Length: 175
Ligand code: HEC
Image 1 (cartoon, rainbow, N blue to C red):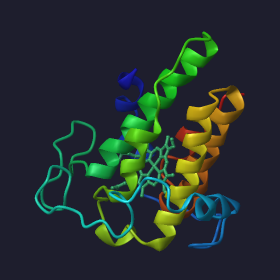
Image 2: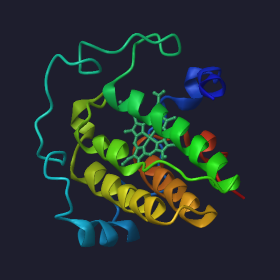
Image 3: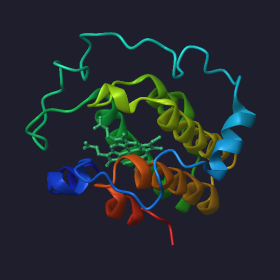
């Protein structure tokens, strides 16, 4: 499962391109859902949660990686977990098998170190909440459509803040 992503050239997945089809921090439909979800049980992991210096994936302590010569941030490692998780749940939904809940792990994106700490800002956090609302919807009712809702959340954020993996993520849509 991991292999295919690891085999991808780094430039396809890295945030090399500051992509933008959407202007920075443009309001998204997802933000409304995010606002409706505010106050959910995420008090221990939100935009104001202080990040712990020195942990693996923090600045100066990037995680060794064969793919990225610079090492990976905590958020990059989590993103690759997202890719693996989505592949896994899709296979299970296709096979009509029960799936694990994704929200308990994916919600950590709001309090994980990105490569550039300044990118963890209100715009990012709003888009993260939009994505996480789609994750909750999937957890509640796993289906092709709720799976594609999560992919739409990935794309909404990546089209603003990290364009490199967009094509790769597009390929994860369940047509
Ligand atoms: C709220 C914004 C946001 C959402 C939602 C989001 N991402 Fe990301 N993603 C980022 C940012 C920012 C980075 C760069 C992380 C870094 O460099 O520290 C990233 C990095 C990545 C990477 C590159 C990881 C690497 O190897 O460096 C992949 C692949 C990726 N995301 C896939 C996904 C997928 C698939 C989803 C949905 C399941 C998703 N992302 C949802 C913001 C987001």
